[in-house]
Amino acid sequence: MSQNPVITISRSLGSGGTEAGFLAARRLGWHFCDRRILRLTAEAMGSSISGLAGQEERHSGFLDHMLNVMGFGSPEAPYTPLLDLPMYSKDLYHLEREVMLRMVAHAPSVIVGRGGFFALRHLPRALHVSLDADPDFRARSLVERGKLPDLEAARKAVESSDRERAAFIRAISGLDWHDPRHFHLVLDVSQGGIAACVERIVAEAERQF
Image: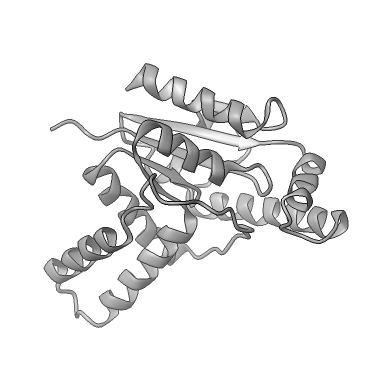
């Protein structure tokens, strides 16, 4: 059986990348998974592993159960954007990578964040997307969406997030997060908004897959 297609979305804070990923998944009828779903699943899996004394068959069954219970963030479910501040751990990343691989093996998926473009770089049927915008645009977007109380706080959050995301990607991959050569599509959300980005993502997925 050929590999299911997957879209990975790398996004900066305030770019609306998580919402764009969710909307693209809903349009395509694919499963959706963001950083929070990955983290919760991987953390639970890691807790399970610590008590299983290396019993791989039980480890695999636990992950299957978690993915089924969480429903991969089904595109039919409602989506409410939250402030997505980074939380980084290399050990957690390796567990999350396993979750990503299992998701793609199970169904076509849209996966947001957590270095998906690097974790799934070897998959032939993958579309890697980067969403960004200039820092001021992203700061204003955070305030307008009610994520932060004022522009000063939003600018600080954007600056901190960009620095930490870049450090995380460098730590797990040695790559420059901002290098467009790692992606098939590099989109500026300030040019037409999230809706335009979703249209580009869906159109390219339909063309490729």
